[in-house]
Image (cartoon, rainbow, N blue to C red; front, top):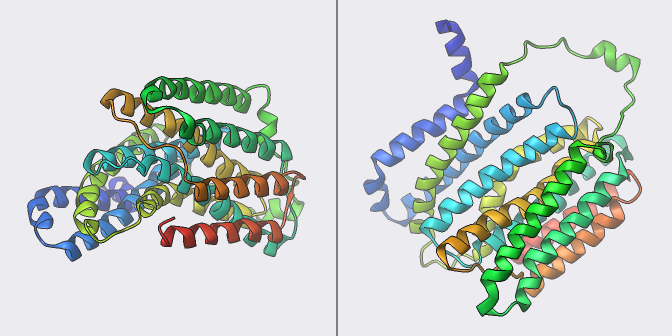
Length: 368
C-alpha cells in the first residue's frame, strides 16, 4: 500500500482515528480527568460521546459496504445488527461502572421510542412533505409490529408479575424465547419470506440517465477489518466515557431515563442519517426496515445478552416497565399498526409518531 493510498484511507477514517487518539489520551490522563471536578468530567463525557457517535458512523458505513451486494433486507439487517452490537457494548460497560437496576430497561424503552417515533416519524414527515405518499411493502410493518409487541410483552411487561424468588427461572426462559423468536425471524427475513421486507421501486428513465458514475468499490476485507477495529475503539472510548459520566452526574439528580437515552442515541445515530436519506430519496421501505428492524433487534438481542449477564452475576435487573412507559409503548405500537397497515406513508402519519416522540422527551425531562 502506497503512502498516497494510506493518506486517503486516513482521511476517510478521521472520525475513527480521532476516537482512537482520544482513547489513548484519556487513558493516559485518566487520573487527572477523574480529579478535575464535575465540570471537566461532564465536558469530557460529552466530547467522548460525540467521538463514539463518529466512530459508530464509520462502523455503520463499513457494515453497509459489506452488505452492499446483498440488497434489502440483508443490508438493513446488517446495519441494525451493527448498531445493536454498539449499544450492547456501551450498555455493558456503563453497567460495569455504575450498576443500575433500571438502565437496561430504560435503554431498550428509549431505543424503541427513538427508532419508531423519532426515526420513522421524522423520516415519514420529511419524505411525505417532499414526495406526498410513499410506498412500501405493508407486510414488513405488520411483521415487525407484532414481533416487537410480543418481545416487549414477554421481556418488559410480564416480569412485573414474576415473584422475586423465581426471577432466574423466568430470566432463563426469556433468553430462550428471544433467541427462538429471532431465529425464526432471521429465517423469514433472509429465506422464503424475504419478500416481506423488500419493495420493487420503479426507476424512471431520466433517473437512470442522471445517476452518477459508479465509484470504485472499497475492499470488503478492509471494511471487515475497519468494522472490527471500530467496535474495539468504541469499547475503549466507552470505558473512559462511562467513568467520566459517573463523576459528572453523581449527586445532581439526573433522571435514570436520560442515561438510557444517551446509550440509545449513540447506537441510533447512523440509522437516523441512513433513514432520512432513504426517505428523501423516496425509498420508504428502507426506512421501515431500519426503524422497525432496529427496534426489534434492540429488544430481541439486547434482552438475552443482558439477562445472561444478570444470571451470571446473580443480580436481577428491573425489566418491567413503569405504567407511563407501558402506556407510551402501547400508544406507539397501536399508532404503528394503524399507520403501517396500508403500504403508504404520508406526512400526517409521520407527524403522529413525531408528536409521540416529543411526548417521550417531555416525560423523560420530568424523570418519568
